[in-house]
Image (cartoon, rainbow, N blue to C red):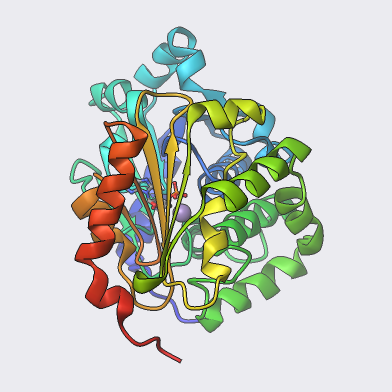
Length: 349
Ligand code: 5GP
Ligand code: MN
């Protein structure tokens, strides 16, 4: 497999890890499988090196990731600010995993950035990192996931043989979730080379798939059925679909964190659809969460930046709006109209 990480960066990282004692790992708000997988693989690796490691997420993460090895040690900042603050203050090394801008850390950004004595290392696969304050950046947008990048990093640091089974499980989970079970952003052969290597560590990839994707509540399924039947707005002239859910509708189906995960992908299964936009009244904050998914070359990230205060990848992006759901739907329709020429474009076969 081709090596692409600059040797001097690897050596710098090795020195930083060797000299650090208290290491804090952080990720983006509303952590997903890639963020949690990367944190736990890194935590496991650093603990093997005898380091004191704290994994802190800005807010809660979905139940379907709680089976991951080491997940019980993850601290949630939003619920434990007072206990965690001193630990953030005495950290000498931070790892920023799976995000490219400080705002993605939510309220965790302030205490982390106040610790000016600590060294900060970014490991991420989003375009255009806005974290100039990092002392060392591993930013590779061509990677399927932060976990794929982390695989390369860990192998460069100490060789393939030392990678443990638990680290392999965490890395596989991140790669699998960020590619929708290897259905998008996963055409590079090296992705499958890595999977082969992870299988050699004894991971049960079929079980991992079931743990993540076959662990939904009945309520979640009924909410999905309701949304697809009642709330889906198909815009055939634009090859686009709008989905929306109010807070009330989510409550009616006993919504829990993570229940709407994956909903936005579903309309892409409708023949000819190039773009799916999901607008959801946020159950944790007073805003509208926006998710966008596309196929082929339609740039979701461009649309997310232009209309939804967000960004992301070409085919998977997100953002938020400070307005009512009806206003958000209007903005989404406007966005679709503006991008009509790209949406109507011939599909690549
Ligand atoms: P999701 O729809 O799963 O919430 O987000 C999909 C992807 O969009 C994420 O992996 C992340 O890369 C990006 N994303 C989501 N929300 C935001 C946001 O508020 N700002 C930016 N820059 N990217 C986002
Ligand atoms: Mn990711």
